[in-house]
Image 1 (spheres, rainbow, N blue to C red):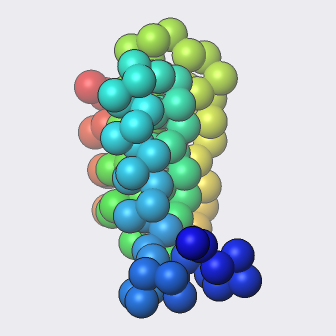
Image 2: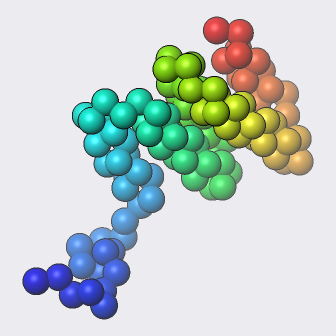
Amino acid sequence: MVDKDKKPSQMTGRKLDIVECLKVGLDAAREAGETIKEGRIYGIIGFVYHRRGDFRQAIDYHAKALATAEEVADRVGEGIAYCNLGKIISVSVITNKPWSTMRKISKLLKN
């Protein structure tokens, strides 16, 4: 029986990582053939890495979101991915990492 007063991390005895949880959802979306949901989850994972300050991982996941959106002609998903990549550029300017970030994104957009 599940104790409803406990958090999931308390029930398992270990701290759950949000990225791990999202990757479970990502696998489920893939298995179900839900490509649009798969792309959205890539974007959410990218957002988590962005918030953690891991711009390289954030760019990689937003690139996956963009590629997935382009694959199924999801224009809204494409717009979200481009917007998120732009946010990474603006944050990287503040943190003095603009050129390496912009080069990575530029290479991504050329493909």
